[in-house]
Length: 500
Image 1: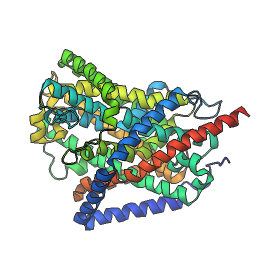
Image 2: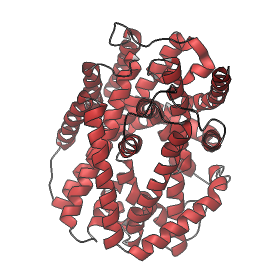
Image 3: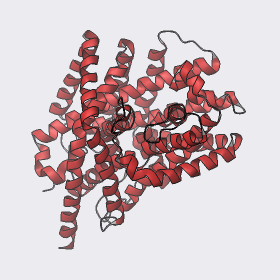
């Protein structure tokens, strides 16, 4: 049954107001009872990672296999849209938007920091002594694993059924539409509303946390590189400026604001990478990257299913399970945004662009930027100034440090702004169901993202909301397994329908 998403109202009152109410209640809990909220959420997170970590690992591994089945099987030639539909954007702009929306400034934040951290504290899978040649290779291999195929497969397995259902069945652009092939027309009822409300909450939590994280890194960069102390109100100032910029961009729409930012950050991203590769320890970076790619391919299956039996503590919960849960918490808004910009492309092209190309881009960035952090041994800086200072510590060892730092700050901002734009756009689609939601609704969610981040930064609850947004990934894990079944079932049915 095909349903048209067009209606007279610019938003869905039930999804919008219940979502807003849930967010307000959660924020009041954090403001009025911060210790109670923190302890409660940490208990839930500890329970999920300790008791269900094995299922997080298995789910991510299964999703990778499902992605290759979609790309290489009979479904690859199927189009995300009707036969006459054509792509809206150039390949470069399309990839720039989808990569920027999904990766945010996390790749700039963790790119130099994570390999250095594992270099001084080897993961239990490999073990061994810290700060050795083997430790460097193992550190990079684990970083590749956390930002490689498994991570991007999570986005793919929501994007494909959502885009296919929306463009071939004329469904509204909501998170719930990804479940059409398992729920059918019931997505238009209570179950669909629950899924969309859940997606709004997860998106607000994830992006508000990232906003605070980016503000922290920018403040650290200004202090570390330029000696600028912005005082206690620095977080509010930075968040306010970022919010103003991404709200204006999302107000102008995908074709103008979001596309422009997506193109811009890709050019800067490529330029910074080449600069570090050429002026850094080039031969070391090339060797480390090549060697670590080989180790990644060799150890992919064992790493994917490694549950750390007998290892004391909760290393997997703090790293691998944390990452899988974090990627899952971002999946609702990222998948809706990528689906929105992928009309007219084949499933094979979309899977390759969302799974393989970003994985390669992450490997290249981590290999060069993270490799530079290992070569220059920025571990002392990380211990003294926090992981947010790692990228600026690397810049100290390279020529034109001042100019490079400006581009790094610029890159952090543009990557984040692309993600924030896509999140605000997706929130507007969640709460309206329209492919092109109204400007006012887009602007509202842009301002809401910034307001939530500012409030959390002021109350010191950023860590708690981060943990909360990760806890929301627990039900998402089961939903993803459900979607895998529904995707193949739905594509099979559509294939038979088209042959009749």
